[in-house]
Image (cartoon, rainbow, N blue to C red; front, side, top):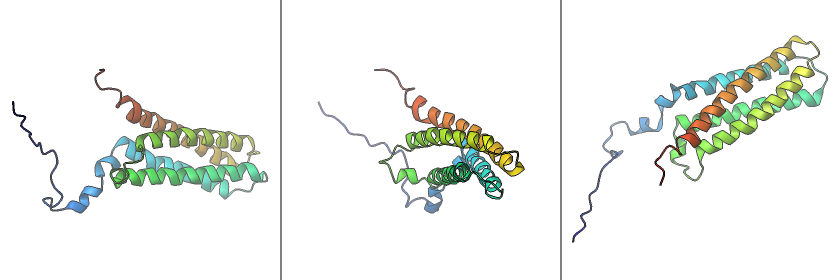
Length: 164
């Protein structure tokens, strides 16, 4: 009884592709709903930061916390966006990127919600601080949507296979 081995080729070699460098850029992700949601999230966070930063405020600790959370969260969203657009996840396979993004959204959304509530309570009727906390709440909602989409990618698609 002989066992024949058959090789099935699923991808082409990069040497046969004329534009191998364009393979590193994922234009499909940038035009997807998740890919378009991340720049909107970053814009809402940037507007929240600018509104609070350009206002006069007296409660230093509350608004410094808001500024740190918005800028840090915006930078992390940019990093995850670049990881997906430039397909860095293919090179760094030791990290579960969907799970890392889900945890990032879960922790960041909670911190952003707390920061927005504190900014709204301590705004003292100043228009810039009210606008900053409003953009913070908008960013919180957008990040909740991103967290839900990240949850769908990391858990629901993995468990959809047949049960053994």
